Length: 321
Image (cartoon, rainbow, N blue to C red):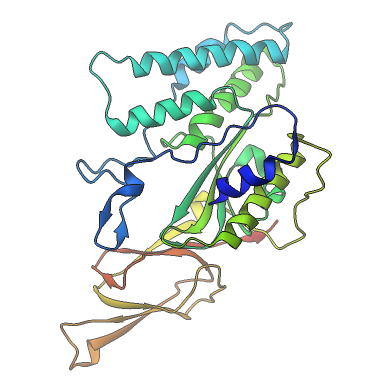
């Protein structure tokens, strides 16, 4: 939906460089249903996460950094390093033992992203409000999107596309600083943008998200003579360690009382859970209360939950940017 709006609007814009839009990165997951739900994130055959098969070799990056000289230009380093990354992905795709389908799709997408200065990975959550994952070194870019909730993530690779993009460049910068005492910024950024609930499509909301992306691209000089600027709005941020998962200690039928994006104080109700085995006792209904001040960002999509279900993911220790 967002890419549809971007295509329509970019037709009439003057682009400084090149923008590649990939509308169908996960063609299988988006078409597999279990009842009324789209499985989306996981391969139903083997449980593989479609979004965690990207590639990063920290040792190879540190080895490349040793080939950089003090006199070499930043553009020269970028050109050589991109060739290095592309070759490494090609070698990975040519593994003699083969690769699973998820990793094949991931690596082909990663290969497309190698030459990009800015990579935006568009996602949806179960029942969710808008939020964005931002590498800690690119904090300032949080204010360039019209997204109210920002999660700052360290330079640690956990298999996602944004990490597979920025971890090599950040690692290279730090290695060059250590080896040559030379401060370099390659200005390569990558983000995961969570656009809301996965089972809900809204044309108007899609256009709002397209405007948010255009405001970022314009601020980065990708668009020529464009007047789209970031909105003046409240933006709240947390470090990844303060983005918490709240599990249920009992199963049953649940009413989600706290909505994504809503501010909740310690002790206020998050959910009411009906215990279908004890309907005739005082344990027939239980209230799940907030363990601290928090903001729910997303919650489980179903009203039927098991004990130990990831019910909510929430901001704690958040601050205004």
